[in-house]
Image (cartoon, rainbow, N blue to C red; front, top):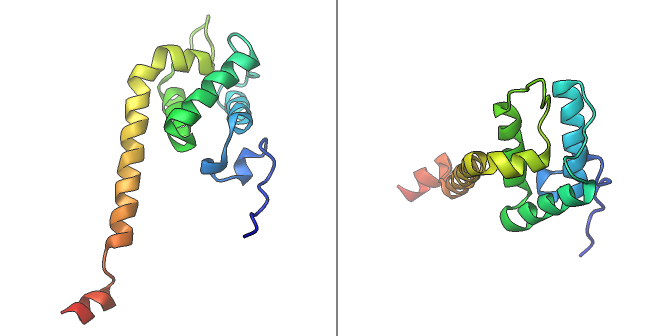
Length: 130
């Protein structure tokens, strides 16, 4: 079985979220900072530390949950003069207890809906069954 070659990790827009890795997420964070706040992304400690946190979350929860967590954190964050934009370290440290459960619930809901969609009978199957 041949495996299709994925787009480069930095090309997060060209990849399915399921195929994102730490590089994809750091590029996503960079792009969203520029788009939402007009600022370059600057990690709180170091790139290595942030990528380690992202990797641990990917390994534990999967990339879809990590993306939902980041998106919810961006949605919820209110910039201040002192902290004009959130870093992943900030999200992981201060927003995780609030936003990770939301991301997990949403992921479970989507999986449940997809499962129901797959197991639902089509109109033809229902007519045949009756």
